[in-house]
Length: 100
Image (cartoon, rainbow, N blue to C red; front, side, top):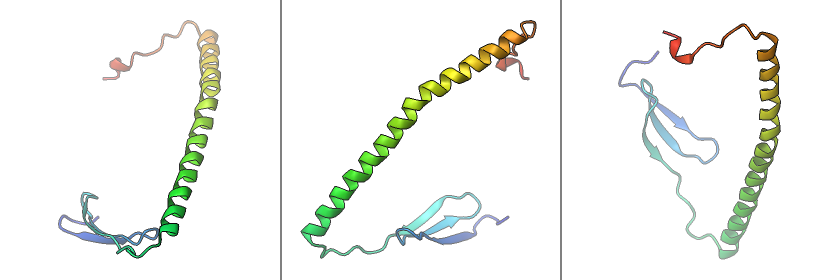
């Protein structure tokens, strides 16, 4: 394990950001982001904005599907827990506060 004062240099493969991370705590000490091209055309900028809207819509629809299925999953888990509790009525569940 690294001792205090040791730093790790990390290069992000996605965006090219260079990070300096404290090895002992995992805290980011500094970052250096790559320079962006200020001469990007208006059409390129609009394409990026429109593709961002598509990515947001896709992420929203995936999250919506997960939550739609979550109700059914939780209902099945609850029914299974009820069956388990009914099969052993003499056993009292432990209070989480009694785990001392």
